[in-house]
Image (cartoon, rainbow, N blue to C red; front, side):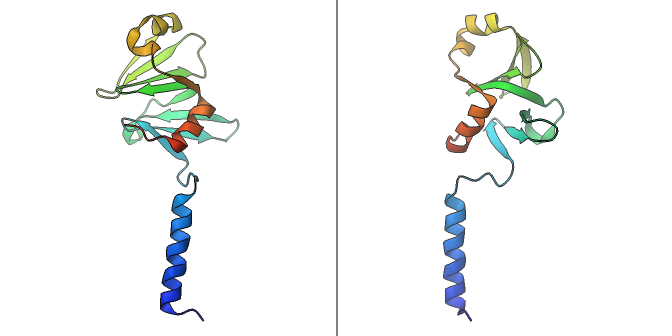
Length: 127
């Protein structure tokens, strides 16, 4: 039988180990400005960007990038469309890849495949 002190120390040690793990317990990762990325495994594997407060208009993500105050998303379904999200106003704008590369605000934002972004979000704190 464990003493109360031993139980407390065991619980403390287990909590410390669990908190230090790179494990996603909630199934989603915060991107920025209240938006979060979720890994999807029903029917097919993919990643979905959800807006704050579980609002409508989620986006299936092929590529994604973020730099305050913008999130840029290349949807999985469109070939030449990028969705620009201003996290200050939650305004969405659709532009072409050529427009994205021509705009100095958007072209400097690093873009990652959805899978790579998922891995980066494990290690990186966003704004």
